[in-house]
Length: 446
Image 1 (cartoon, rainbow, N blue to C red):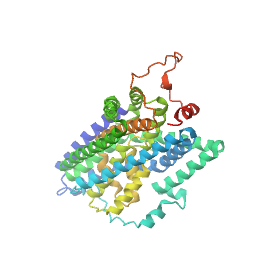
Image 2 (cartoon, helix red, strand yellow):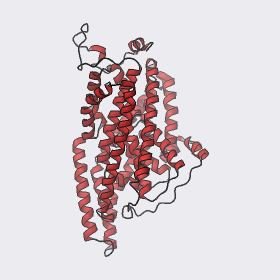
Image 3 (cartoon, one colour):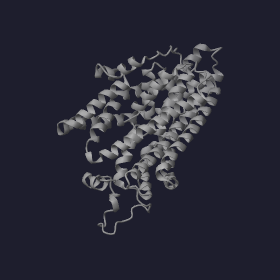
Image 4 (spheres, helix red, strand yellow):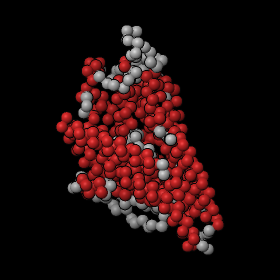
């Protein structure tokens, strides 16, 4: 379905550009304003429906995924030390990714001079300057239901954190609610799958609307945006691999060689999950025990989305630039911190970044309809950021394993232990189940 959806999105892009060009050429706004407006509104309806459906997902999706994630973190206290080290790494990598995204988008300024008059008929007011104390106070919800009703991401996150920690502390008493939250998360993922099937039509409408209003000249902006974004991702790769090299030494080159295949799978499918089985296998070969990768990779796919976080900061400021909104540094830092927190826990969702960007734009009074500008080329951007997520998680897993003193000599995958039964593999690499007692014994004194 993922590859077919990608094909349909590409077809939608081509048809959208063609339809928009036909309207721009045959129904000029100057001579046929009413008919032109009819076509533009019709195209815009498709992307507006999609954006409304995306907004529908925000509150329940973030609530359920974070509650379940926090509650399950308390399942094995034996993994605490590695969990703490992993979180420290994830937070550092997240800050680097988002800060680099903000730096590069301010350096390149891809949105400056973009004509969005045809993309949206709505006028956007000035961004309210946030007082630091008001911003801090605004984080904490007075009413959890009101926070969900208004899609206030930060307030939903705060409530979700409290709920997750409380359910973890309750143990068996809280298990029914954890299972309920887990079921809600699964339901939201299923609904997200349904919503994403509408993406080709939304992409068609978004591109057709923009081209009909602004002409083919807008495509030059898209080419510049994609090029500058990939240059920024290249800088991020250099930084992440260089930091990894400080821990791994010359073996960082071996890691790069091993992760090329899962990275290409992620790039071609724009799906981190599609690359996960191959990434497990290649890290096995690199010398990462499966009991470590089986814990680190799923955790990283929720909390270590380096490419996605750079994209979110890049895209958010691009939209502000496109609408001619000058964001002061203090507001950009506030956006950075918001993205830092709100990007956690929605890794399994296709195009999850759109959900987070939509909520962040709404929170800071920026034009939510600007997401339609990004939606038109999101597939191309998604491929790069997904491959970057794979690189970031491979480096993180390898570094934490080395930090724990458990990185083994590289060997062919699934080498059978001489004393192991025929159906088992050395270090338990054949499965993802973790034995906390064995894990604790082997990590003592590391």
